[in-house]
Amino acid sequence: MLEILKKYRVLFITMGILSAIILYLFYNALTPIKQLPIYTPAMVNPEMVDSTIQHIANKKLHKIADFAFVNQNNDTITNAQYDGKIYVADFFFTTCQTICPIMTDNMTLVQEQIKDMDDVMILSHTVTPEVDTPEVLKQYALKKGVLDNKWNLVTGSSKDIYYMARKSYLAVKTGDATQLYDMVHTENFVLVDQKRQIRGFYDGTKKEDVEKLIEDIKFLRRK
Image (cartoon, rainbow, N blue to C red):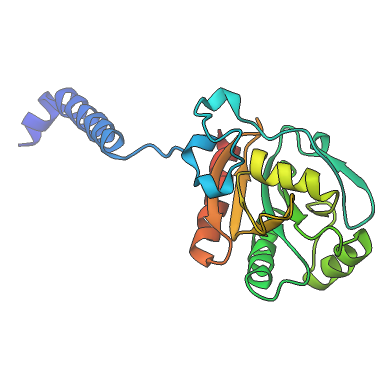
């Protein structure tokens, strides 16, 4: 037996290597490759999308628009601070007693996971800017443990927030039809990539969705 092993050792080694390669190739062929869609207005619930863009299905035609808002420190925050970065966007208001506290607590979990990632940030927009002044947002930020270098809570004109919500992030319903820029925020956390494209929607009230969001952020960072 030893004589046979010695005589054919090169053959056995070669067959072993080939077998390992074949098994590796089979494993990769059978393992689904993770992908994240690039969302367009046509892919999203029409209730969340402004009627003027609901028809857009071309992935190259929908990106987050330029913006300028004021944050909890009374600083102007624009798209320039987010360009080339991955970020999570959502909509809330400080006096909300239903889903907002849950969403904010879950967003702090996201903040904890990304605090050492220089290329990942958070952007939360109030849907009641007449109430949520920078001073009010600051108190809310302090209460919730917001890190100023990672997470901006922003306010601005109702018109600007409305159009960003429904024309860019595709994440807010309309409220009272008699009020032009009335907004009803949803539980959505929106994942935006380095090219200003929407890559995912997540229920911000559910831990399992938040965990998936964190995994998807890590996936985008590796690309």
